[in-house]
Image 1 (tube, rainbow, N blue to C red):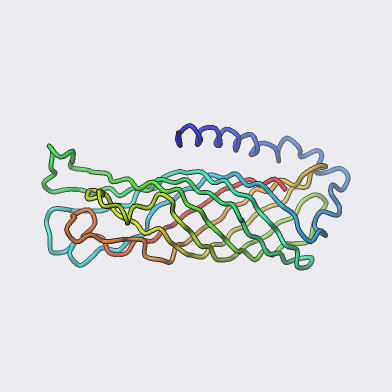
Image 2 (cartoon, helix red, strand yellow):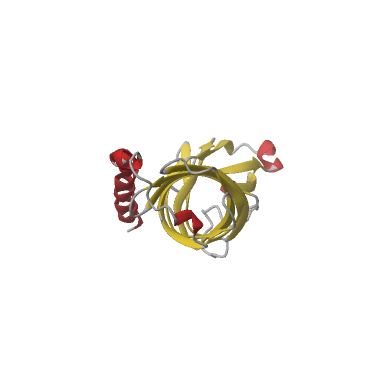
Length: 243
């Protein structure tokens, strides 16, 4: 079900991606939505794709064992759905948040095993996947340039608080899983561009997020978990927003 949802959202995202190029002639004509940036509040719908992975450190146990030769974090692609609320402070500064912000992602670790348990489903290269459905609440400060005709550029920076609906740290039957905690917090920054059309504003944006909390609920009895100490989330997101 999640795979089908990703395909539908990706198709919609590609359609929106083409809009800035289809409507370039309109952007060079008269001034569109001249009062848009003077409103105290405005709202937007955000669709995005993300590239995520885990940043991790090895536990000292890793140097004193011979069952795992190497551990790597594998990049994966996911999707984002969000509803944005923007508060206008003045001509150049805004505060933004996303009361509804869902991120679907699947990160993975690849282990190089010395003696894989073939009957148990292990291979020389064994991959352990971790799926996430995250509710995120970011609070961002946005700094915008002056508007040039129907175009404006901006930068953002802020903090975020995450709750992973699919985190498995509390599951009793996850002996072969890398268990992660539900809560995370971090910082993020990015850059975006406003394209003003007659009836809406289209905004492509790229953003980088760094998780600061240790997500790992370490199991010293499991070789896939005992060799890892801290796990932090990392994500790059490219999104399109309609305001």
